[in-house]
Image (cartoon, rainbow, N blue to C red; front, side):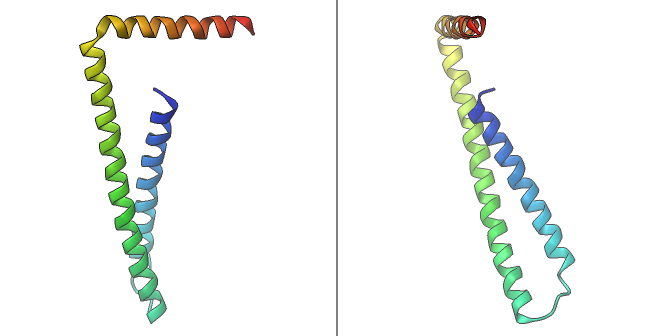
Length: 98
């Protein structure tokens, strides 16, 4: 798994956790009175919807990227093996020098 995939997965997980925690906070403060509390809840609800949309887009992009990589590898299996071998050799040489 590449660092970009790891970062994307971590971002998706963090966004899901943020949405979940924010929804819990909204439920816990539903009885709060006042115009200010109502305004803050509305802004939080808007932010949550935006975060959910961003999370869905990120997940869709990650899935499409994985599908694209899979198609490329399946269309060019020998080139993929050669590239993987070359990268592995390069990493081996660099690690062995240290």
